[in-house]
Structure formats: structure tokens, C-alpha cells
Image 1: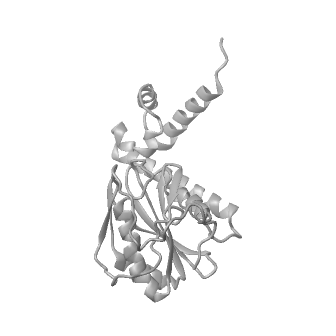
Image 2: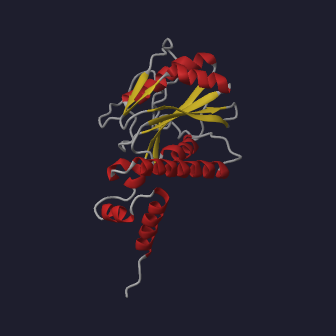
Image 3: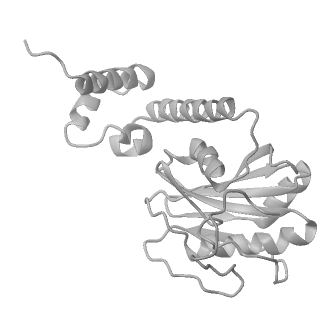
Length: 249
């Protein structure tokens, strides 16, 4: 008898554990896994045509795994402040890295030392769109009495580049919050286990220049994106611009 490979043993354990935790029939998982990725059971559960009870258990399992990642991040970074795009990308990945069936918008509210006061989910939509209401963000920011904020949302389709709506949202928020002395430090886009930072891409507006608008904004995830050379953004000089290891207030 040939020895079982480690990979086969891991897959078998994954299927059996998923079966016990969710109630999805073992035969269904095994049959599905012969032609599809078993990760879909958690990332795209509707593809398995599950019952309402099974879907509920998958949601509970996903919520547990997300909580575990966040607690693990907090344990590893308990005495650190979020002072760079790299740390922000790592932090928000704990919330959004495996979210592929919907788009979610989060805001981390920080004190003057860049320590997190609170992180909130402020919008959740479909696979390619979620509406953002600036008034809700303003209310949460004032309740936290924060000094700065970092935005984050996921691109379920896997595209890493910021869309025009991503940049427009960031502009609108800066128009609202800069006059109040609340700094928007970054906007992080999560796709799978990777992230893009508008601050690192030099696509963060450098100052508020327009009148504040509180109309809702719909974030769209698209395949086509345009480049931005609007004067409102900080000019990029590759020969002289250092890598932004920390945000400046």
C-alpha cells in the first residue's frame, strides 16, 4: 500500500472537518472537489447549492475564522500603532482577505498616536458594488472623537488597481474631514491576500479643495481603470520621492 501524501491527508481532513462543522454531506463535498476548488465552500458557498441551515453554519464558520485572524493580528501587534501602509494592509487583510462573494467597506478610527479606537463595517453590498453614505462615516467619526481614519474595502473580482470610484470616494471624504481636523491617512484595497494602498500609489489627495458633499457614493469594482494625473494629487517623482514608510499629518 502506497503511503498517503501530506497534501492528500490535509485535503481529506479539510473535507471531513467542513462536513462535521456545517452539515454539508461528505459525498457532496468529495464530488464537488473533483472538478472545483474546495475553498469555494467557504468563499462562494452558493455554488454548492446548500440548504439554509448549511449556509448559516458556513457564515458562522467564516465569522469565526475572521475573528481568529483579527485577534491574532491584535495579539502580534498589541503594543504597536498603525503607522504605515504595510501595517494597514496587514490589519485590513484580517477582515477582508477571504471575502469574495460581496464588497465590504470598513473604516478604522484612530487616536492621535495612530492606535485603533474602533473599526466599523459601514457598508456591504453585492459582488461589484456597495453604497457609501458619508453622513454615516461622519457620525461614527464624531462618536469616536478620532484624530484620523483609514478606509478599506475589498475587490471580490481580484483586480488590485484602484477604480475611479475608489479615488472619488477618498476625495469626497477628505473634503468633509480635513476642515474638521480629522485626517484621512489612506484607503486600502484588499484582493485575496494582497493589498493596494492609495498612499503608496501616490493617489491620495494632498488637501481638501472642494465643498463638502454628503451624497451617497457607489463603489464599483471594474476591470478597466484609468490613470490619474489630476493636479490635486501629489506629483510623483520616482527619482526623488522616498517610499512612504509612515504617514504624515
